[in-house]
Image (cartoon, rainbow, N blue to C red):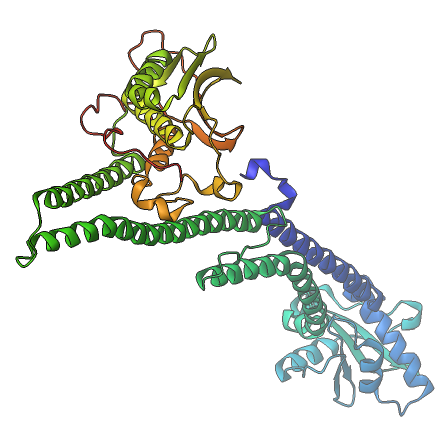
Length: 518
């Protein structure tokens, strides 16, 4: 957010400060130019008023004509007074009209000025001394000009006329326009270059980097990212794009993984279902051959095999549906206090006969503070039954199986251990995958291969984790969050509020099928 970012790094502040700096530079340049031009104008006007200017020019021309009677007054006036903005008009006795600018004097104006100048008498004092007859107030006022005679050898050779008022605006534009335009253009180019280099250049480069990253990402490069340096709005845009790109890339990778898992699952399901179906079809075709005369014992044996394969097929399909409901969140879990001792007792009762026949002992241990867990009793029992059946399958005759519950770092840890051969280390990371078994030759006799996947799904739906390692045999650890529910009426589970209610009858337990360890 803007409040979390240094103000001087904001793109808007940079734009504002850049424009203000440009205007300040322009105003400073214009001010300096104005001062310089004012000084130039003041330095080129040696008099303070039209009357003083008129007598000064008349004195100068009188002296110049006395030194050189053949001098060209027009060239002299333009050379000496061409930079003076005030209009200076020279009316010579021979009829010539001279001006310090290239603008021609209108004939009517020249006639009026001559009429007024004719009334000026011979001066009593030389113009160089600053004297001379002053025109009458009336004519001067009517002509709106100051008159000064040009006296050469005691006679009037002409009259200097300086009109009242400011110089024409067009003359100022013509005289000052080129210089001011040149300076203004230089300032504009320099200011624009500074703004482009300081403000728009970096922003343009970083925006182009964001654009290139989006194009690369759109073309399939999921690792394309935009640089986030700068700390302004462009950096924030790049950060938002990178965060979006990371999320989309993660989703794309998840979709790819899901697609691969889906294809693998279809292949595994097809293989698992094909095995019992092939066996059933073979025995059914054998029984249906009229040319074969089977005795009752052989027929009953074939029918028993078909019945076993049918039950196995039913168990695989049921486990698949159960796993799909667990992983898809379609099964509602109850949240209530479950006594760990009761879970262990049901596991012992379920496998009591097989353990007695094989001489396997079952040890149970419940530490103080680990007597109760919060969850769905049926699903927790299903997970423990699967683990116990798996341990029983891989425990040698006369061995032992241990069930334990203990507190660990504020959580409840339930373990199922056996003293069997353990799990090969290379298979430990894969044993919770669907249909994964280390010994492919035992696939037909080792259950559906989904038992541990179902256990993992049940534990994760309870907000816990499950792991396996070797410790004198195989050791499976279920770690569940410790939730206190003194009312015993439920609570908030990992699936959020509202996931309550019984699911009795909708899920499958391990009756009839013992999932494999691998």
